[in-house]
Image (cartoon, rainbow over all chains, first blue to last red):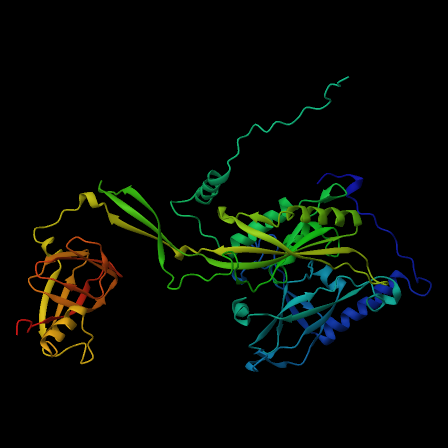
Length: 180
Length: 377
């Protein structure tokens, strides 16, 4: 890459709401929060990032078979997660035939710093695994990657965004993820 | 005073085909870079051709950049990103001013042949015969057959999303211009498929307290057809010139005629007499005595005609046909008529000509006949 001033991303300092909070204080609060999540709660999910460069997709439909998906090295991330209650449904809603229990939606919150430390990112379409029992890992697909987190809830005292809320749905074909 | 011309006129010096010649040219396009048979065409090919048509036929630019076309056929979650990654902001959100293509995933039976249904039976039809040289040096005929294509209507929706009113005007003009003569065409694998513009709808965001942008959707119906690889068949047959028949084979191809006398009248008591027989009945004062026979003619495969001479008078009451579509009879070389009911005199020459329903099977003609025995009595 050519080293010019054009390549340097301009950064503006954030000075709002700094009368009562300093950057050190923000870092301290995030540090306490991460310690709580990582060491006390100890809830983890496994992130399977789809390698979008190496994955071969169909020319016309831009669709990839599960066997053609290339994943980056799985990463275990500390999060606070919630799985909604399962729902009894039928494939044929008209005749109420073909019962199945749909696994509830997975939502989890993750510190931006956790992603930075693990040098990864979560994108729509990535796979998330949760070890629900010692034998069984349940898989989900990221539907909302929580990238736009400028709202008040996701910023610490209205300063900078510091965590993301991810929404995932259950995978369409469970058999696909058996040998993930 | 006449002024000199400021600009040169464009001369159309390229010869273009018209009429039947143009039709043959279209057929040639289907066969281009192909075998003797046309190329198969499936949904995937039609989708690809439609995408090309939108990308190249409906090209539009804004701020000196051509609007990208996103093909949103699949609902796989990361699919969109594999196309849109070049046109997203730092939050991976799609940047405005782009076109999209979607398709209803429930194509219906098509109207390309005016809504008519295919011929039942899914038969293969002979399209072409090609003489080829085999490895052993002998020539054979390749019979190229195909089934009737399956007509299908595909409903596409082309949408444009833009922040500029002029762009939406230009795009609307562009699409309407393509369909001003009712139809436009796409050519998946060389097959011409007509398209019609069904509807134009406005999907712009008019919320007072929301993001504002213009959006127009164009519903386009492609009247296409599907030809899969299974719809083609190539049959190799030996060239007839090189085939030799063994002695005796030809004799077996001659029809066999058998006559069987019956004890009963197959037409029953209510038989209607011919005018001549009615006259005899009148002369005798009683119903003439009759003899009933069944004359069967077995036609082996490939045999379609038989000629023979009769040695008695008789009347044919009815004719039963087995594996025969049509049968004709000619008496003494006269006018050929449908073989149904007729009278024959002693010494007449009869010729039967049949058209088998299935050429690979034998055919049979069964004639129920009667003759009067007691004319002299």
